[in-house]
Image (cartoon, rainbow, N blue to C red; front, top):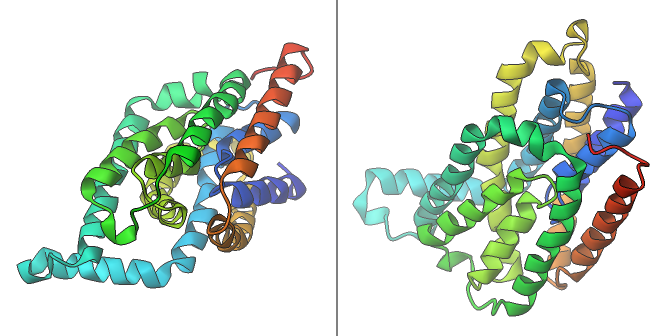
Length: 281
């Protein structure tokens, strides 16, 4: 992989990671258009690893919230008097909400990295999950806020997050939709999506780095670590601006623009696949 391709893929990852339009779906489509075999182990690992750049941008952007929540969680663990704190409960909620995707991801890793990488799955998920997003966006009462989040809420949202293992569904789209159906406001579900992304995506990065470290190396025919690191850095830079923009945008708008975009992209992809312009894998 040359540096230009690495920068392009990193920018796409950083911009799309937290938008409900599926970053993995976009990377899979772009990787295919660039001529890569999208179910190759090094490409699958590259796609997972560069997500850590966007996650790191989120960690830094939300650092004050994270420090407050982590501090409250530790105080609550060691002192029963501190357990009534909303940040302590929120900390436990994020931990419990992160468990389902870790379990499902490990159990079905082979299927996720091979069968589900087909562009037919990407196209179908982009279109079908748009209907779920539209329903949630219109049915949500948005009467609940961050201080109302419980472990039950995040366990449900975290379980729905497992659908994001299908490229095209969108991890943020899945968590935001589930949050809206739990009657949280859009800013709360967006922030909650950010928090749940941290353990999920960092876990995937560590796993793929350990498993495919040698496979990514150009000496073994992989995409190369210089390209992987470059894409990760670009993902961090673009992700920082994307997170800032999304929080401001979602405070005043619905998800309609994202739903419309998903439908158009999914339909276009199906046409390209059906006419043989591009192959599914």
